[in-house]
Image (cartoon, rainbow, N blue to C red):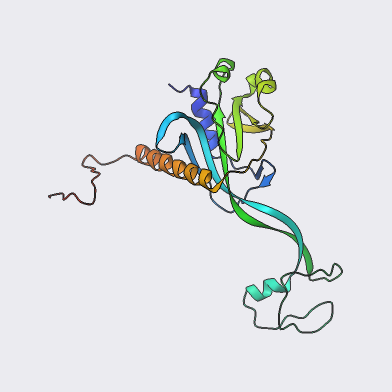
Length: 225
């Protein structure tokens, strides 16, 4: 049976949208999939459940570059040939990159390769709960304990250095220690995404009220009116 504190933390985690975790920047313009009680192994709960798993998009291989602002004009479909502010000449080909630091059209930005970020959160509402054998399943790129603020001082030195700590108080989450980012194989990510999808779909079906004559049937079975 879940405590009221556990359920409050779950509700708050559902809307938790940090800009970065584990030293990587999350793409805030993309959606995040959130699921609760996600199996560690696909198709079985024998190996444990993760209290909350989020799947987001982040930028990998981030680097600082300089681009020509005129390249944005080209993408927007402006027919007029842009003029290079440095040479004063019209450009038939607009460069995406520009190394001229003294040109007014040269601006600094960051580029990165989109990648998948799997975040695991284990909720512990008391010191005894923290010391229990169950509920320490960390299989994400970044992994966190989420605890009430009042027990933080009692458990912080017991948490492994690569695991982050987030405290909860009055519908607010505060990251006290960041997690260490670790790479997952494509196979590991694939199964965790599938697990999250399964739990998300099941949660949706459980929450949305169904009509009394609601019937789930396979495609081969005929239903007579």
